[in-house]
Structures are given as C-alpha cells and as structure tokens.
Length: 510
Image (cartoon, rainbow, N blue to C red):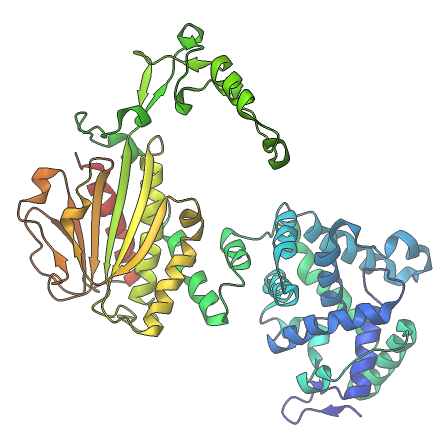
C-alpha cells in the first residue's frame, strides 16, 4: 500500500503495486501507438530510473517513454493520433493532440534533431546518452515540481529497479485504478489527465519559442564517452559557457593588423595561390594548388582501386592548371604558440562564488584560438600548446586531458597540438616556415626556470613574447610585454579584459 510522507503530507510515496498502476496509467496518455507494449515499457524503465536519480521523477512517466522512443525511432515514431484519435474521449483530445503536435513534434522538427540521431547511431552504449538528451530537453522544468500535479507523488529508486512487465498491460484500467487511489489518498480527481495537461502547459511554450540544443550541448553529447564522469562534463560545460561569456571581439581590430611585408614564408611555392582568369590556364603539369577547380573529381574507394598507371599518365597530360604569374596571391602561414606553466597549481578560486582560475585559463585559450583564426581567416593558421610541468600529478593530468578534449576537432584536423614538456626553449619558436606568436601563461611568482631564454634578444629576430601573469607581478624577459591578473575585480571579467588586450597586442605584431 502507498504511504504518506511524514514531512510533506501532500507527497505520496508509491509502493510496488501503486507504482505499477502509475507507470501503466501514465502510458494511457502516451503519444505513441505500439503493438506489444510490455517490451517497450521495459526498454523505457532505465530512462525513468535515470530521471528519478536526477530529480526529474516528478514528470509523468509517459514523457520519458515517448522521448526515448522518439530519439530511437526518429521519423518512424508511430504517433497515436494517426490511428486512435476517434477513440479518444472528447475531453482528452485537446491535451493529447497538443502534447503530440506541439511538444513531441516540436522536438522532432528541431534542426538539431538529425544531429542528435547521428550522435546516437554512432554511440556504443545508447541508454546513458538518451538519458542525458532527455535531461537536456526537460531542463526547463528543473525546480518546478510544485507546478505539476505529478509532483505530489514520489517514486523510490529501489522499488522502480525491481519493476518489470511480462504480460500485455491494460493502460486504461490502470489509469482508472490509479486515479481512484489518488482520490482516496489525496482527494484529487482525474489525477493523470491533470498532470498531463499541466506538463503540456509548462513545456509547449518552450518549444514554440525556439528551444534548441546549443553548441555546448552538442560538444558534451559528441564527447559523451570521453567524459566518463559527470563532474568532467560539468567542468567542460563551465569552460565553454565562460568562453561564450567573453563574447565576440570587435571586428574592426581584424582590419588594423599591421604586417611586415618582407616577412614571407620560406616555402614560396606552397604559399602562393593563383587568381588569374582563362588566359592564365595551361595544360602543362603544375602543382596541386594550381589545379583548376573544374578538374577536381571525387572518387569512391572502390573506384580508386580501378585506377592504373595509364590513367595517371593520361590525367597528368590532360588536366588544366593555372600559370604562375603576376596574378598570384600570397597566403601566409602563422602559428600561435601558447606556453602554459603549471609549476604553480591554478585550480583555485580567488573569491567565494567565483570561477576557478584554471577554468578561466582554459576558456581564454579556446577564445584566443577562435579570435586568432578570425583575425587571419585568409591565412594558414595552426596552434601549438605546450604545458610546462614536471612530475605532473594524476588529477592535474586529467585536467590537461579536459583541455585536449575541448580542442578535439582542431587536433583531429591537424591544426592544433597539445603536449606536456618538462622544459622549453623559446628559441625553438623562431621558424621560417611559420610566422610565430608566443603567449606565456603563468601563476608563478617569477619567470619559470624551465623556460630557457635565447642568448640574443628574440624580438629582434622576429619573435614577440606576450606574458600573462596571474596573481603575481614580476619583470618579464627583455622586450616582452606583460599582462597581469590581480584579482581586484570579478575573475571572469579580468580574463575578458586581458583577452581583449592580448588580441590588440597580436594585431600590433609586425
């Protein structure tokens, strides 16, 4: 028998029999029409278990049942109204059709739904991912238990875990039994219908206003298997949220970049791209960069196996190339080098309720990479991050792994790299292939001994150093520019200001 909670007289704790009636009665209002229902119910139970553990168990069970199967089936989801609309009592039709059309179809019609399905199809273990997607969808209802009639019942995880359906259930009879029991215990009539109507009222407006998944949500879902623990996902979300909080930089700064025209790359041929017209076309063999775009062919792997030496020789003599002449366009190579000194731990918050310095540093790095790409969008840009640390502890190593995951796409594309080194020489950044930019981030009280300067003034040899000193101020090396975080105002705002000054400094580098 169900019992009343001792503290909240309006909260009803369900025992096994009452829970079974509730689950089946809730599915009476499901937006899906399945044949054998018991198997689908058992599939949905783990989704509801996760919701109960995540403080979302006050939402009607049929919502999790429908969302989970909607994510699994996609556009083949069997909407109940298509075959059973005439069978529904007239007083229920408006709520049930609104639930299907405005909520379930609202989720299904989102532009991001196809991407969600792609992520699910690639996942080895789908249930945890489905749980998280449902949690994100229902996030607007967090903390709104009192807004829903179903918030007056409580499901115990231990009882739910033992639940299993083996015979084909009668959802209409279960709905009637549960409503009768609730009326006897709490004095509430038509409980499940009221709970469904209130849920629709709370959620449909969210999707009519364009609720959709954010880039931060997709980053978490795409890397769900990498973030093995919830706290790692939360830290990643904190970093990405803070990066967005920094905001876009003033686009005018990109147009004021000062450039030394004599600073060309060493490999001229790979840095020049033709822009001439038809008069500049030739059949003479040229490099890949000079190939006329209309000559490009995309071949499947099977077709590639059929290409032989005669095909290759024919193509070499027949393809069209642009000539090398005065119509060439210079494309520079640039590399942003970030040295992250972890000899002093940055995992601390300077004030109560503020972000950790490490979170701010990770967000700053992500934003600098984005800004650098926009500033030099016509050039070839790469990024190299060197984490300076000796005998790094395992927990700090995990934090570095978080940064690696956040840079995952850039690393996969080969435009970014990240490594942990015990020491580093600034002279190694003096390159002829790439124009170098160097930013050194440290929370130490003095310049780290593991950063080895070069004998000559590096700035005279084309290397500009920008130092970010966190919490301490010291004299930077010769001809280097220093920026400081002093903790005299909100930490995130200080990092935002420093980010702006760093970008301006990069724009002034000749």
